[in-house]
Image 1 (cartoon, rainbow, N blue to C red):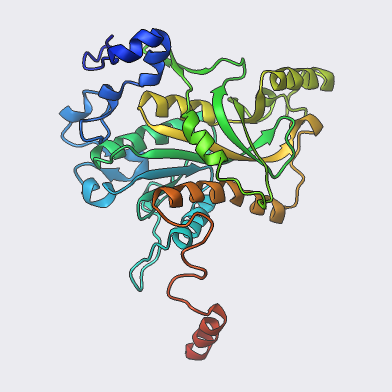
Image 2: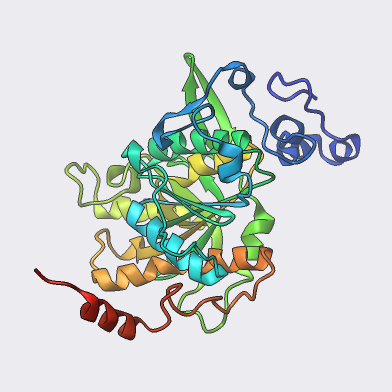
Length: 361
């Protein structure tokens, strides 16, 4: 059974005999998306013919940078909405895995010259900001998947860490996406290509979702729910809010819709998971979406929680994903490898030293 015109992709007979349709989905085109050594293979024959592939929105290029030297050790790619959140996660992860920078250096936003996305590297982990909505995350994913190919990364795992509105789940709790659907409850991304509509299944790795859930501790200040995520193209009308610039439905209409999708096991709403799941699956990349709820949409539309609390909640997905990364690296899951910023043993004394050493004209 060839895959989308790639004759190399053949499903093993044993798998196909059990359930041909499901085997076709689960196989995820391994031969089309991996070389024999496990490194990422692109489903685009044109890239190999190009003299240089410019990753325009990352300010990198296959001819201008030694991408193998820079990124071949990457095993995990973590994405979140804002540059500040992902910079915070990168610094948090440095302490969690005990990654040590050379003295006198600091974390650098590798893509700062693009002025679009941020990128930080912490050992085997890349941390990206992906912006807001399907178009933004889709552009980034194309270039990050190509980066994995040029760097010869082997079987990377992708994570989206974000925020969402809970459906029947109060604010400050985690949702791990089992599968993503659009605003019509369709489990695929629709994309017009050359005047024709392509549908790409928004499938995520269920074992990865279960592994993440099992890392939840009883003393965590949050619960973890695994369920469907509705991904919309809009924050206001697309999510049934009453507080947008336009609204031609009633509160009763809104609640009827929210209860309907809740009965279909939709437990949260956001604006990136459908594209993230579809493109990762199409690339044969194991992926997961972990979001913290900012409110229960059955009780309202506006986020009124204090900023300090929201900032704390946004650390919860980071903590869970960090545990998974640490487990894969063979590190103690619940113990940070460094309790203080690297090099500085005593922040209070360090501040005193800087003050004493400061020179004034």
